[in-house]
Amino acid sequence: MKLKNVSVNSVATYLTYAIVTVLVLLPFHELLTTWLGSNFGHLDAWRIWKELVLAAMLPGALYISWQTPVLRQWLKRDWLIRLCLVYALLLVGLGLQARLTHHVNGPALIYGLLSDLRFLGFMLIVMPVAALNDFLRHNWLRLLVGPAVVVILFGLLQRYVLSYDFLRHVGYGPQTIPAYQTVDQKLEYRRIQSSLRGANPLGAYLVLVLTAVARRWRNRRVRTLVIGLLLAGGLCLFFTYSRSAWLAVLVTTALVLLVQYPSAVNRQRLLLASLAALCVVGLGLEATRHNAVLQNTFFHTDSTSASPESSNATRLSALKVATIQFIDEPFGRGTGTAGPASFRNSHPPRIAENYFLQIGQEAGWLGLGLFLAINVMIVYRLWQRRFGVLPQVLLASLIGLTFINLISHAWADDTLGLLFFGLVGIALAPILPTTDAILNKKRKQYGKAKTA
Image (cartoon, rainbow, N blue to C red; front, side, top):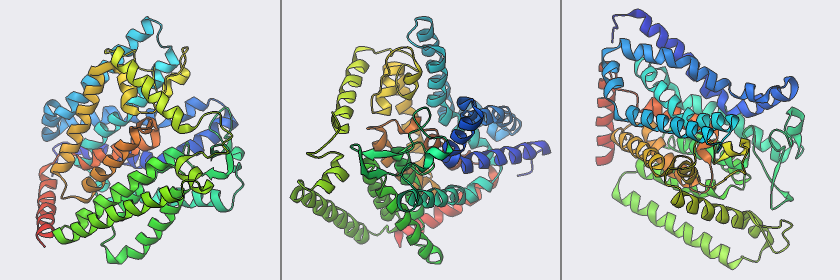
């Protein structure tokens, strides 16, 4: 598509460079910023580098959208943009009200707004850029898997080569990020975290990565590489001891395989095999429920536990308290009063162990309803484009990651949130005349595969 204003293409190119930089550095930013903060101070200032990049990209994204007629109409009429703007205004308004009523202090409010809105903002910035510049559409898999290879290898080094507290050499510790994590305070059950914030964020990140890798299974040219990555990534995932990530990756890879083998016979075999595997695992766990290794691995506690309270009991208690607060406070208590941001608040932190309940605690029933509506619209639009590889990967991943967010605050993790919704922005980029023919070709190919 030849644009009347040549500078629009130039701006889109520079924005593409910035987006690529963010996507590539995200899996390592916790490691890099912790090292920089521990050596030069001002840890929070280093950590907001990505938010500063997003703020710098926003004027350019608005400019190219306004200067391109198709994107201008998209900017004016798109309901996903409208929902995100209303949601953002609600969070800002409730946060300011909470600040005036002393329910939240300044640092908690700022951190809450950033963690709740940055991934949606990144998605909206990426969408017009990906519409005008096809580099992101053509290279999203490399941008995702390339850094992931380094993350996986570093995680395996932590498990088999490096000392258990190696990360303290780069600034990890009580004042930043724990240098190591364990199951039930037992050092023999160390949980690897690689370059991410912790073991659970690493597990959630690997759900997205392994789903994307599994989608390449049918490509014979790279099948050996795919098998190697799945084995290495699966081993890394196992030693995170993140049970929610284990279940999520099983679900997402099964969905990807169902898409790749569309015939009814193959689907029946895959479903039967999945059900048989679940039955075997369940019977095995029941038969060996008194085994100490299995108790620590799958239940994160045993009869010799040194912890005063199991993580399972703590999580269940937090979910109950958060549910009661959500029901009793239909308007919420304000942005920054719940979730990870509440650790910076002057009041006791409120950790729901559920991202959706966290939004309900902060923004009430309306806020949670808007956030769910945004998620539903994203799912619907990904389904509309399900003939593409990236929408298929994101649809499957979103199911698994939604499950993880029901028992953790996964979207509050900047690496996962920005990476996943950045890819959503690529997948849902507005369709321009230049991309319409490409999408129609993919749609026809997908239809032929289904009838094969």
